[in-house]
Image 1 (spheres, rainbow, N blue to C red):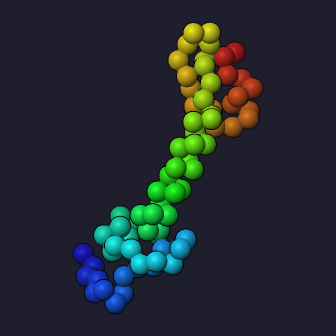
Image 2 (cartoon, helix red, strand yellow):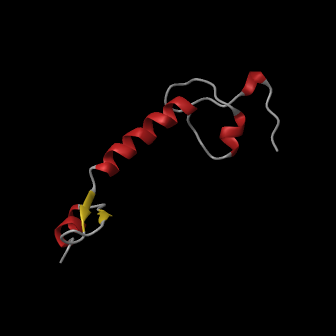
Image 3 (cartoon, rainbow, N blue to C red):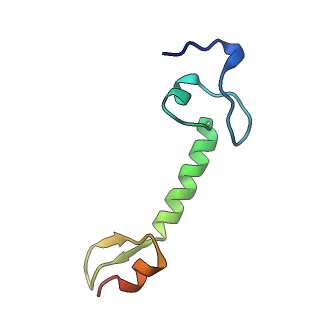
Length: 73
């Protein structure tokens, strides 16, 4: 485990603020605030990318335009 003093905490790649070293050990390169912003963008995008498989069927995630062309066929 890497020990960090307050003088050398990792810096967020998005905003330049220092963030918790434990977050860096988990593999994140952004602070919690910037990471949450990216997660919300991803959630909104994925919310718009679902389609029913067939009439009255369950919804399926559609990742590309090509997938959307062949959904339900």
